[in-house]
Length: 360
Image (tube, rainbow, N blue to C red; front, side, top):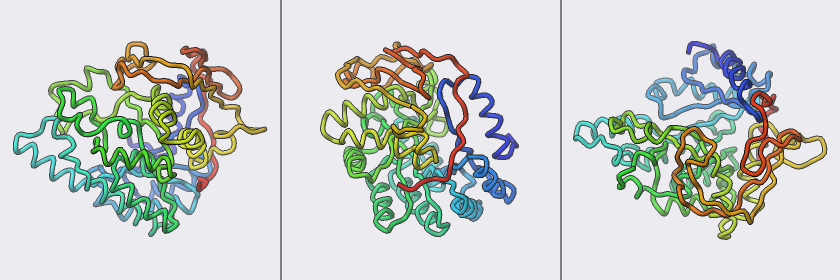
């Protein structure tokens, strides 16, 4: 706290390099777009850190929106991609206060506190910011059909607007909030309806959705189900990094919803290009890093949280039978995962120097 963006990256990278077994990048979060913070952005780019992240859902966003727009403009000029979490803080704050006052602060009302239009209006505004700034943006974990339609219109106008979704929106709907374990499914934005899920699968297939990523958060079962939590204090996010690709294969490729080529693009190639890693990573080519996944489409497993590698110890997909799992993972030519076991030692991963963002 109190560190500049560059100092924060150095501190976190030093900690991460002690434990990481694979290469990694960091996205510094811009909380307060002061002139000093904005002035750091070109220096970050010079040192190979070509992304920043902004939360429209944080309480002070509106009072600082002019500064955020300026930061996006400077980022665009320096080949830095701006990641944006798109939910409207004014709408969410009002509805949350109202629900709590009415005695409806339990987590079954989480979706009510962050309605679909709070995401849609934020996505529309983020696109307008991108157009005004002349800068590329990456909308993190988009979860609804209406928000995706806004992004589609931006694509059609040639704007550099890129969309990420995540597994919970592809595999669950908001009916989960009516169950006794609603807290397990809390994420931001919240789960939506079947229409939204169908739109996201279609978006993956037709390239309106460019990446599928987890936003992995390794809360334990006890932490997520803490009975004292409300819509104000919920712990958003869940542990689903291990199952991202197997479920996308099983529920996407095997069902014909997406092609093998799209599977590779949304899990690897597109992210490498957008985040300045291509062609060192994201492709199989002479001179690239030999980051490879050997995939076994015939390997079938029953998902179990107890058998997982995450410290969370549980999974939302408990008992699901899934076909298609990684057999080997190779990082810079070294096998780091084989037959269900991590084989690499902590400390071999490194913070990667990145180039300018590359439009798809």
